[in-house]
Length: 394
Image 1 (cartoon, one colour):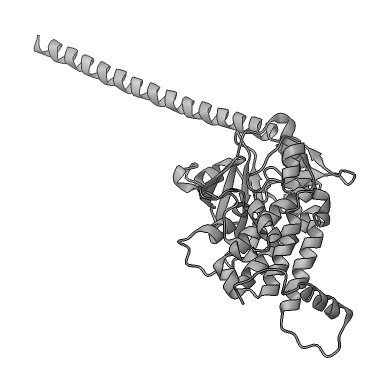
Image 2: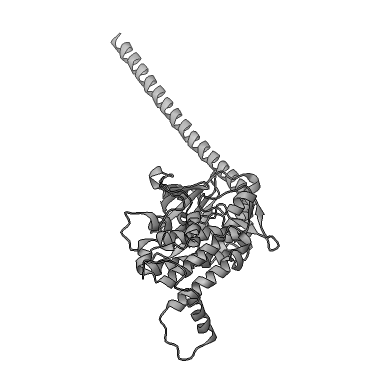
């Protein structure tokens, strides 16, 4: 009787252990199958997204040699780089997408832009944008390092700009960095040069369509670079304007474009004019001061020019450091850029040339014989009468 009971207990024990082990093995098998299925579905989704986001076209262009410098990043690398797009990594959030701070496998710090959903009819345009940005070689345009098309929305990887935006440099009252007049002049000339390049010197003309101080970034040496081409458009040689839904940022929008929906190269000129006035005045494009009769900086600036009271709107540091003729020259140029009629505004190429020539004529040089170029620079420097504006500075 005892032996039978012992044997029965052993049978029950081994049966239970076997059942438990079998159930555990079944769970492990199910888990393994789930992981395999999940990875397979991820591969399918990534292939689907890659194709939908124009990856095949991008590969074709890469094979043709037009995108040799553009790296196609795998999704996993960028997910790890941003800690799976952790909210704590967000550098900025705009209408075109969210920018995260990431660290690549080689330790390089990069901003990674996660785009908004892209419609299928815009995919070819998106790929063209990647292609053109990859070919742009200008020291004052932020460089595109690569992209990823294996995710639901495209990801763009740019060079990192450690000193933030021009907007913060101008308007952050807690910023202890000195922003001298000669640096403002150089930044203005560099921005103008980059826009002139986009309009007329790149392989395909580009209208930026969202020039503002928060889209102008500063590298480790405070060299300014144009960024955020999310709303930019490529212009055929025979086109004079684009008819589009009005997009841009209030305070920088060309009034002519706002009223007609026709965007021309002079619309970028107007936006640049607002940035130029920000550099001169230190004031925001839209005032939050309830005592201001006119909230728009561009309108207030035009009024000051026309009423001969320029010094009332200038940044105190500009008044202190800038020589009268220098500041008036830049103010007059800004005033021309902000003309309400686009046809009377200068082109960006003209603006860039005037600013660069003016900066050159301010450089101390020793010239033995007076060349034609030197006479031109001297003419530029002497075109402004000291009696045209009231002044409290030097």
